[in-house]
Image (cartoon, rainbow, N blue to C red; front, side, top):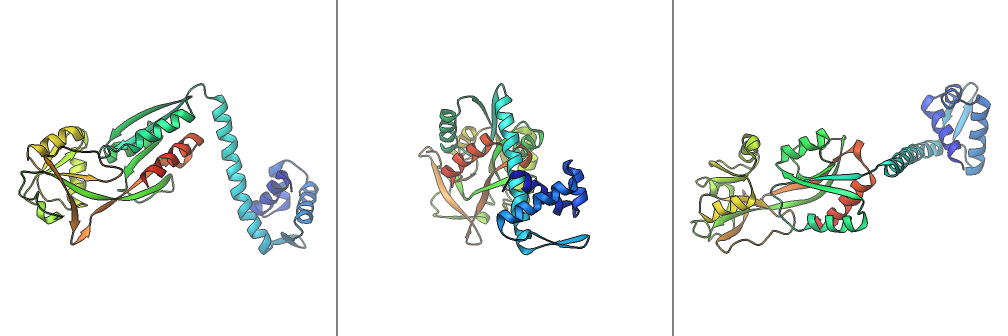
Length: 294
């Protein structure tokens, strides 16, 4: 069974015509017919039943066609990626991660990846959900560790990682710090501290209000370090998520699980990248990080 025979067979089905398949592949119609005969002889089954000037694909042919379409698509991907890897003077991987994440898994994956592929220059940046999304759209990011706020799109690879449990960080001086668990409604009188750039504050506040259900006032910090200092000062509560291993915090901060109507609040986290930008290095790094975060 030759690759050319597979390509000719797929063309026959795609074009629904021996003549048009021949024209598409710049060969004679007899060459197309001979190729199909040889392929069927090799497989020992009929792929197409000829009826005068028309034909009908068999059950075996249907199966073979579907698998061959996938095979040819994969071969194109392999070819294009091989050419790209061989022709790039410098290969770069631009990684984004949501600013709520502070675990060691990302740096561990980068260390492993760099050891295997020292030729790849890695750049890393954090941001809000929307900033990471726009980075993927513009091409400034190759892949992003982000929470899911949109319906999955076929334009992207959406590698699901985990449902991260939401946790509230409070000052030990806060009246609620002795609780074993907190309901969203318990926090109504406290300010919610959000880590966000100035440009994204309104978007982030709207999400926390409308989706997560926080009805309190909002305070903003540029970094997690600044946000935790605000918590220690008892200025409000900081919602965080256990995307990976949570970093140690000051003994002046209490971490309490968050619930809504007696159900643990979680948020789905994924690795996202544009389908059209899929490549060997992106897939390799994504798998390394997935293993650590899942």
